[in-house]
Length: 255
Image (cartoon, rainbow, N blue to C red; front, side, top):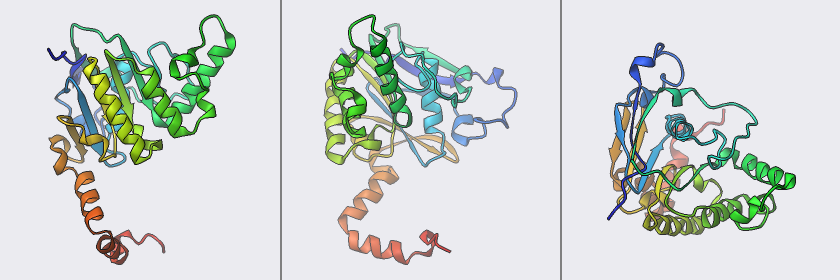
């Protein structure tokens, strides 16, 4: 029997929002949130930079008890407070089942997570934390290798995994490895919520895809996404696409 999603849906606490003209409610996708349900397996947030997908993902993670800069719920370090107060205005509908594992991955601050792991291990007081991440310092690996070590070693199953642009440091081949690992973890009753630009990741079968636009948030099929359509068109005829791209003045940003 399929598990219920650990996070079933979210909505805004409209009654607590006093100033709709303040950030992040100035973002159309954020202010349009009514009842946003989640897949029990994989939900993707997609959209242009600045569309609000990472802002909402971060708010969900913080509201679920994760450290704003990433990590498990046991991480409580902070290097620079940059997250919005959106989590205070989210109403979460959760399953009666609680996840046994979980992680919030932010590509931009994963370096800080790796540093905190080293600091905690240097302080001692218990088994090395790094052993749960593959045993090799995350700082002694490339950015992509450290991401992969995290997903392959630290994600154990029966978990809620919230990932912000996990493809940032991964080659296409490594992204396929992540898809395979995701499938293994989903078979172990895990739920993923992912903000991404990757047409490879968002191809996960049966995933719920939310497109963040200037008009709000809409559910779309994989083949309807701009990511899929542009990638398919480019690979089908790269010479033609490049010729049109270079001739199109709208992309000419050099004065």
